[in-house]
Length: 607
Image (tube, rainbow, N blue to C red; front, side, top):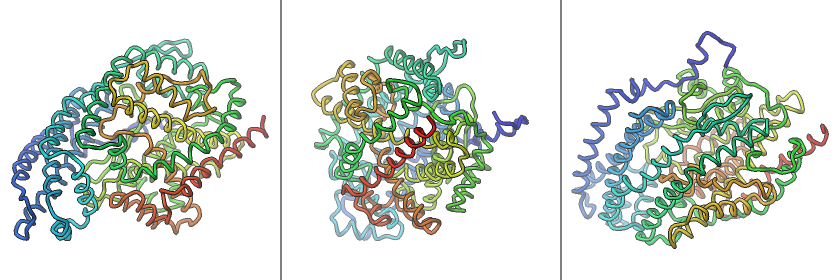
């Protein structure tokens, strides 16, 4: 993979998990930690059952102790959960780790029982007593989160019903998500390339969609559709079941809107999401010129689903692991020495799993470890520019967590729509640096295409997911939605979102089955946060380009506040913009579409 054949290079592409719990899934330290965590949760259940009805000066310390313990316990659960996630990512056949992940569902359920008690306690208090309680120095840093908890608690069922629902969710709601993960992980296809046929996982199949050979991309797409066709009825059952559970919960909580939960989790209003999608919808036609020009480059008449990631320009350019590390550190340092030093530390401490080997899960992620103030990044590095971009992206997530590491857990928990801020900021910074250093037009063409591919996905692919979710959940209120109808809803959503950028024969009817985001129980409507983050991060990066290194402290302050205020308040405080108005979003969309004209001009000059 790298020119270094000593083995050191590949060793440094493997993460260090033993410094967290030595011995992997069989770790005695991990086993002891989980056993203590279970006991602590049981003890907290008894303690919280004795919480007083009303706050008094005499019982404030007791109540504060409960809230701080509630916070500590979720921090420890995060440690176990993230560790198990890393174990199953590095080895999909690590069955003990999969069992630990199932155990984590129970731990989370037990913690949610505690939450229902805390919520019940919070909503019983009058405003004056509650405000005085939150004036305690130990609670002031998490005041925003506790007030948020109290507001949401007043819109839920009584404590005993919430506790019962959480308990049922372990073996019902979340079980459908686990079943889907197992079903997707077990799927294999026979793939033919260079005259050889091998059996590969769906994660490996996904990488074939980036091939410069259209026949490879087409085969990958057809194999994906065929694989999910064998599981479509089961996937439909899983999706309908978890959606039915969710809707029953909403109905009993008297939440009229299916967007109430995702908006509350995102700490933003529906006005903001509507303004964003309106700006996208009104401008998506401007991507047609990019697609038409790309079709000429690719020599195709129809632009299909499997052409979305088709590379153009100098797509075969290689960038080794060591080259990628140096490039990222160098150009992050051009904006901030602190960011560069952090990334160098992540490499040296082996926080990153990037080795290309069999048995790994597909995709990439960055995760934190609760009380262990560190992150770990998972990916598979294949010496491409896109892999370097992924690495920079995930390092942005890790940097975001690092900025928040000294805050209490509740003050460091930011919503998904803000989670992409630092990652996309890194991505934009590194891409612009690569473009400025590009030595020929083919290289520049590849870089512009990479940026426009991302814009096309964020504006069309993600919007199609949002439209599908809204339509599906609306219909699911009236009963089970048949598998064939799910195909129809998905194709209709793609027609609306993609406009004329996708050919009428190029849709992906089974995208609802193949995309795991639709099956996540921890975060409903996990689609708009990506587009939000893409556009919001672009606005932040634009400020950085305008103000240069002087913007760094403002940027750091913005990230520092992401867990302590609403999304709209954050934007107003640090950027001076109103996210509920069209202005910000129109400007943000224009910024991302500004690459269309240079791309077209570059192609026309070289055809």
